[in-house]
Amino acid sequence: MNKLPHSAVHELALPLDEHRVRALRVGELVCLSGRVTVSIGIPTHQRMAEAAVQGKPLPVDIRGGAFLHLSTYVRERDGLCEPVYLNPSTSTRYNAWMPAIVRGLGPRIVGGKGGLNDESVATLQECGCVYLSFLGGGSPLLSRALRGVHSMHWTEYISQFRLLTLDVQSLGPATVAIDAQGQSIYQSVATRAQARMPDILAQMAKARVVGSLG
Image (cartoon, rainbow, N blue to C red; front, side, top):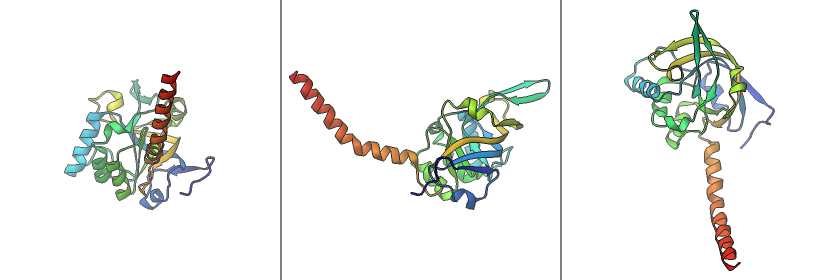
C-alpha cells in the first residue's frame, strides 16, 4: 500500500468531487478548509438518516462536503454565535445510521475517532467517501481552525447535538483511516492483533506454569 511521507499534508478545500476523494489513501494526512457540518447527537443522526431514507432535504446541504463527529459548544451573546471548541467523538456510536446518511445525503468526508463498522466501510467505498480520524484529546489544536458559525439548525437540542455548519481553516491534521477503496486502518490493526493472539496466549500459559512451579 503506497503512503505519503508523514510530513506531507493534503490541504483540501470543501466541497470536494468524487475523483479527488477516491484518490486519497489510508494513512495520508489532510487538513480541511471551508464549511464542515458537525454533530454528536444520536437523535440528530436518527433524524438525518430518516430524512435520507425518505428523500427529504436537510436544512443544510452536506452533499460534497464533510459531516464530522466533532463536539462543539456555541456561545450565543449579543445576537452573535461563537464556536468555542472542537473535540472528536467516538464514531462507532453512530454505526446504525451512517450508511443511510452517506448513501442518501452525499458527504464526501465523514470523521471522528474510533472508526466505523464493516457495513459503513462498504458504503464509503460504494459512494466515494472517506473517514478521517481526528486526534483524541486534540481539542486545542483542532479549535484553532474555527472561524465562525455558518448556520445552526435543530436548536431544540443542546449545542453539541444541533446540526451545526462551521467555517474552518486548515482543520486537522487528520488521518485518512478508511479510504474509498475499502481499506481501513482499524481492520489492519485488528487483523495483526488476531494473528498475534495465539503466541500471546501461549506465553501467558507458559508463565502460569513457571509461576506454579516456583
